Length: 339
Image 1 (cartoon, rainbow, N blue to C red):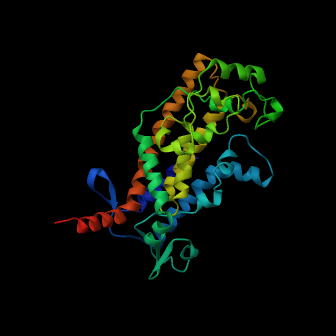
Image 2: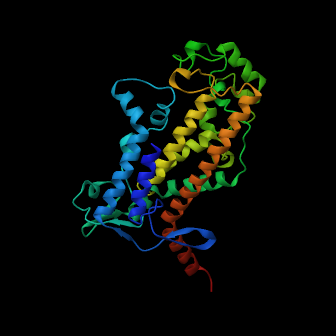
């Protein structure tokens, strides 16, 4: 799979096409701004799209094979159920704004939402896209910027998964087919012996009722901008959600990289969970022990660094989408200012 990732990047590099997806210049405060449209010859964009499709196929192969035979998976299904994007949606390649695909007017791309035909080429209809998605772009930019600016908090030890089964019997838990490593009583004892420090609303809302008062915070949806921090596994996984919500306005390479991180984080999440998933190849991280906590934090820190790099790319993509409209708004405001 790593070889396919390198092949995808080589295909982009061969044609001088960077994963950011558009030519750029550095504006005020280091913000990357779009410049004149880049025209990609048909051979170039088709090669880049094909490399992206092969990479996504490799990332999603296990899920697609299981789905075809009706099998479930306690780790990877989450990426396609909690996040409702299909492998086909992730596979669809978009270059992002400022890129015109030559000789694409006669392809299916011309009929995709937010596509605009210019002569025989196809590009993102920037104005139509921002009219429909502008508020989402602004929210994602604000959330990722605030999250990236906060210090990492690394003391949760993945206990959110334990809080989701607290005081439940084996047959009542979400993944009832898979045994709890320590049994129900042992799992409850771990929750009671530790402080719960979950700051992510979409994890906290799945806590059992008896577990919620044990959490140091009571996060609400409205607190998201104030609480999310870069050490949180769920905040890292959500980068995939935000990249996909912004499609086709951000380069698809960014969405695929976010998906890859989400998949890796989900594996860490479930290795540190109370479930015994060794038959599936997931070696437990026993966070009930000092050694297990240290191992978890080491992995958490490593993945958080990857998440911060992807946040920076997502912020840049949002800035590129908004730069033109916000520059126009500033110009209009200056024109109205008293002289």
